[in-house]
Amino acid sequence: MAATVLRFLPWFKPATMQPAAPPAPLAEFADLMRFYRAEIQRFHPSHYAAIQQKNPTQAAQMDGLISALLILDGLLTARSEHAAQRPLRLAQAELAEYKVTPAHFTEQTVDFAWRRLCERYVRRSRDLLQAAAPLGKPWARGMRYRLCIARAEQVLRQIQVDPAVAYQGASQRAWVDELTASARIAWRALTGRR
Image (cartoon, rainbow, N blue to C red; front, side, top):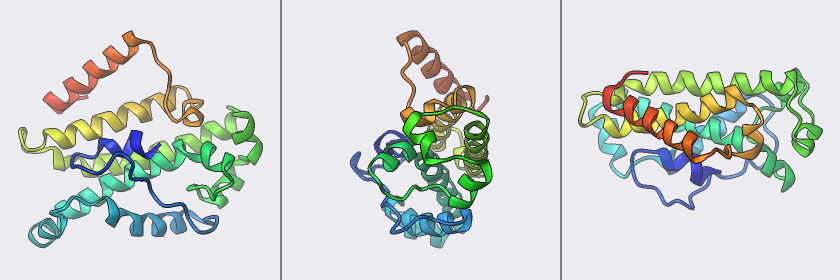
């Protein structure tokens, strides 16, 4: 799934680049974020060190953008990671809190528990994307960031409408839906509006 979501990054990274699997199940969300903090470095643009030295705020916003995509990717790959018997990139405490069991991933169950878990991860990703939104200014130079954020928001919107999308990793949409989504993304990237 990383090739699908992390390819939205506005700088070049190989399409095959995947986040590492955690060595063991991650107990709390704080553990997940510590794991991602180490992963973020692999997804930085090549000139990140110069940006961090010149503009630490912009560097932090880039980290937020990468974190948002990693959180989204962790949700989208959970089913395939469960099937491969690898530790999920979801907090175990939250799975227990929402009563999401291994059967959810095996049977692709969409119930209140799964909806609530998806909503939490969607909200976290969206909050990080909004914090990274200043990267989209000025208009010409920020276009690639606005495009990245708009594309990620489109996936988050799909999950909100149909949480089963998170099991599939991406929705299977008709060409008309793809065209509509592309037009919406282009409009947001060009104008900076919703």
